Image (tube, rainbow, N blue to C red; front, side, top):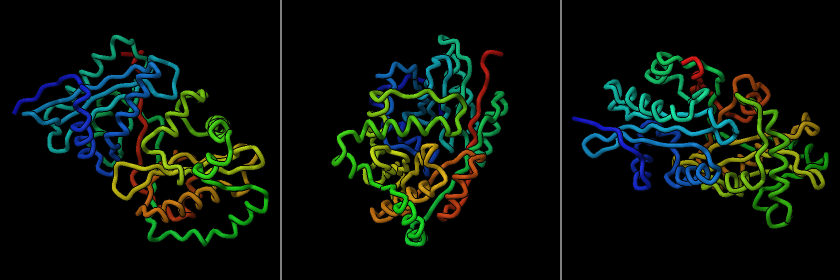
Length: 320
């Protein structure tokens, strides 16, 4: 069998999704979501590209690069190297990696980064041999809704309500508050500086944030919960759809600084999880930086169980 690397075309999205699902069956994105994200990158002027490895008419590998959507530094890149599990250890991954680095030379990159599952030995070994180091470890946690009982937290939800904090879904607020989207955006901008990140948070404009958040195929208005105090949106917690049947992904949960310590985060998560359970989802999965003991503690109390960790790894290209 022979294989070759070629450029990615708009006709390749289905093949890309099929390969992604084979490599990461529990995490794969939908074809629709990949198209959406690519379109956002193009509109934002993000540098990105993708290549395929084809073998006898089948796509057996994918490589890609892009600037992080949250970064303004166009010389920092995230990369992907995906090889079908049945075609590993035959040089395809190395060829993809070398090809991606060759494409990046035109941009004089400062660093490249990617995520790997620490339980997949091939990925860890491949990265270590090429000089990548771990900058952050993300703990994966999973909740089976068959074991979740939101009524256990009724007293905590009552205490939050007693403090004058209302919890509403985005679906409710967008029909009752004409400033909903602006206030939701303002809440995230206030919360995100305190979320563990590899680089300083760069506030995203409303015009950039709105299509990425509410325009995403993953977005679920009824599973997006917002805590409201008067005219201020003080906290958010949302679940999204995924490419995995019956599974929702848990995204950001955060509270503005002046409203922390009141149990709002737990109340938001209980409401979001209950809504997903009632909508028929079988479970949810989330990821938290291992040093974020506060959120990990909340998840443990809610019944999440730890799974494999993901390593956020980086390579300094300035020394290459």
